[in-house]
Length: 239
Image (cartoon, rainbow, N blue to C red; front, side, top):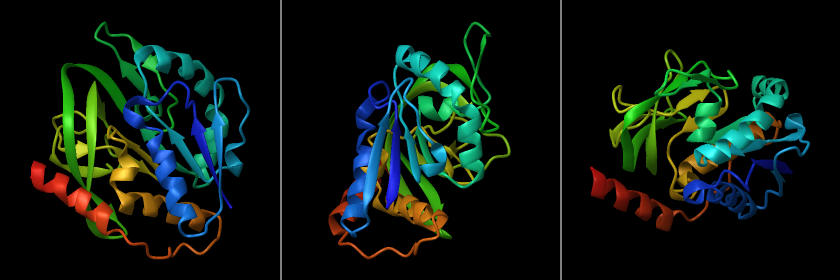
């Protein structure tokens, strides 16, 4: 059985982010892979070492400030699980929170968890719209689509990005990069939600989670014609 943890579903669910958990679970169940979903809110206990896929969504500034203090209390436990290969998907505010800090317009540094060596600074421009990025999945370039809406500019330094921007702004609108990958941690600005729009990425995360548990990571093939047509329709529109 795979265990999925949805952190702060009551606070962080911008642009249908909950759909990422739904897509992960459904594509497991179609293959007969049993899945348990834990929804963990502020103050509730969780053992990250027992989790196979952790999802952290995005929210408004107010909602993110509420969860920030709680998440910092979980920092050590989360760092240990990340070092052990926990598969993590963090969207927008959750992505920023995994970094070193967020620099406001006033020059104030709001500390992050420091799990990823990246930082975010407040920008003047709102970066909003549909996005296409090219992601390397098992050595194959895959076009991934999504929707971004952020003013924060994230800089990943020497870390590996999730992908290369083909259309849209990405991390900061400057370097042509989108998201980040560190071990099995994936951060991105792509809402939409991301996983229902990108079945290959969803299956990749499932495979990583199975592999970490020492289970067979080769997935049963599904009929993905409808999903592929939807991806290609967006790619054709934007490129």
